[in-house]
Amino acid sequence: MIRFFAFFIGLLALLFGLELTPWAQDWFVVPWTTALARVSTWLVALADGGVVATGKVIRSTTNGFAVSIEAGCNGVEATIVLLAAMIAFPAPWKHKLLGLLAGIVAVQGLNVVRVISLFYLGQWNREVFEWAHLYVWQALIMLDVLIVWLIWVRTLPRVEGTRDPPPPSSPTPAIA
Amino acid sequence: MAVPLIRPRGLSPLARFVLSVLAFLPVTFAIWYFAASLILWPPALLSEWIARGGFGDIVRAVDQNGATLAFTTALKPGQTVAGGVITVDVNMLLYAFGLPLFAALTVAAREPHRARVLALGYAVLVPAIAWGIVADFLKNIAITAPIQVVTQTGFSAWQREAIAFAFQFGSLILPAVAPAVVWVLTHRAFLERIRRAPAA
Image (cartoon, rainbow over all chains, first blue to last red; front, side, top):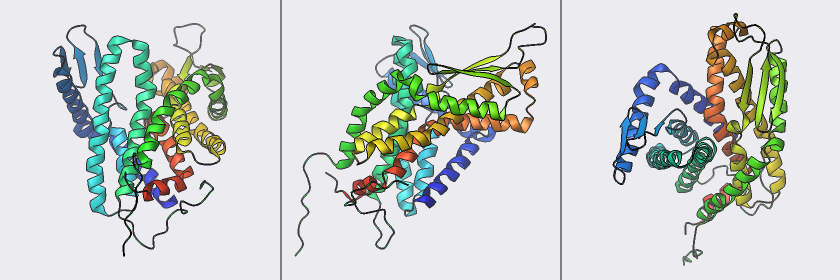
């Protein structure tokens, strides 16, 4: 477990550092965020025609309200956390790749819900928007990452002879 | 002869756990918000200690006002302005939203010694919160402030790069990841039970 966490934190710092480089921003983060804005706008437009996307900005054509999808709200960091957690955890590569594919869909799917909900919350009440934006959705996205990782760990094949944590009958919690 | 597994009806343990977390989150968020002055006092103290210890020539005073930590600096707003100093207000809640998440996860897991685990998790998360607060303050005076203020800080180019990275890491990664990591580390037996439990 300690080796997993050391690997996870090292990989997380490395991937996050890479994400901040101008190259990664130009070739990955900006196009990704633009695509997220377009997908969110397309989904919103199914029920509400008065919405347009310009780059990473989603704007209401009826009242002029707009949200700009910035770092922390584009799901890239959440994806990096999931990526690091799955790569660092001991598992066959086939399971890692499948887990990553499904996990990225799950995390980004909820992130689209976050963007759309914030777009409408902002038009309804700015205070609620700030609360949801700055605190609640941040926690929910991380919870999503944690749940996806837990589900993925459950699906992994068990290898006999591996050193597992204490058995479930242990009455005391294992505190590292 | 193989004995068929008898599986409990209803939700899996993982699904029950997730629903419990979602049920506890509004409660823990409410407590966190309304008790912010008290809950954020230790991170505020630690931030003050770090700021005064590491940047004593810049920081004159640090005052907590609810969930806001105000840094009064020795920096002048500009050469043409007589008197006055730069103050930076940091919203500590921005770096502490992991506390209600950790609390909801811990309470929902229903493991023994929850109070002890909550206290341990809080103690571990306080430095992570302080990281974000101090990095936010430094980012304000070393990067986003007007150039005449930035030059007074005396930070070199690489130090400003380090501050930028520390701020990004402390605002985008640490507040969310730290509670999850601490929770996993303090609930290994619970996680193993979840892993071994049959799906519903």
